[in-house]
Length: 249
Image 1 (tube, rainbow, N blue to C red):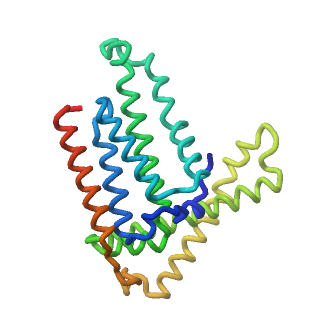
Image 2: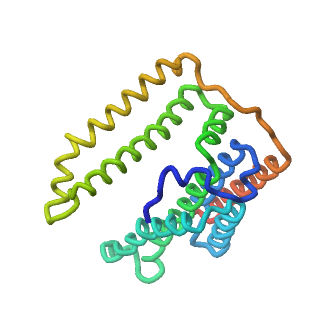
Image 3: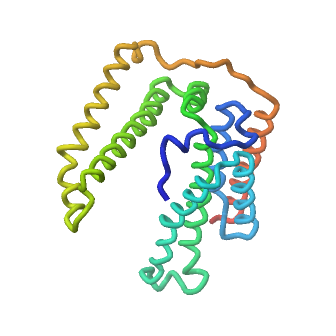
């Protein structure tokens, strides 16, 4: 169930990988918003939702191993909502009316998770940089987003190294292992993360990252497939908004 941060980027092998990075990012974002907007409690709503998710999976073709882990993660996170049914007030009704709230949360959450993680699989780290730089966003916002992604990868990398070192040294054995690890975090894990962050900041300052700004590194290639995909996503998003306004839920 564990998703490896470095392995998940750009591991898709579908036809969408031939499109521009900006197109992939915008298409994934548009489908994500559409999944959260569709009225999933209506028959045509959840059918369209399933069609959107399956279409995006076929276009991206993520590895089956990563897709299975993402699905298991979604089930672990979202299925417990159904355990809250006994805690709902009596005014929520019984039967389908009581199931409607967790069902809506489950369908929206699972579809959004699959679409967003599949979009990440369709983008490498350099593709994400090119996509963000090409978007009409403030340069400061782009730089902050890129730093969040980079620092998150560094944080997970250092955390993995620390966990492996503690496991080799026997810190995970015994009934008090969890408490030992918890109390050792301020003395072992936190200083390493802060030291790595300082080194990254120093390297960025030496290279003039704060002065040069964030600029595209590759020429932009816009194809007919990019325009067709963006047009299809735009139509789906408009249809999702229309159905939500028609049903009111």
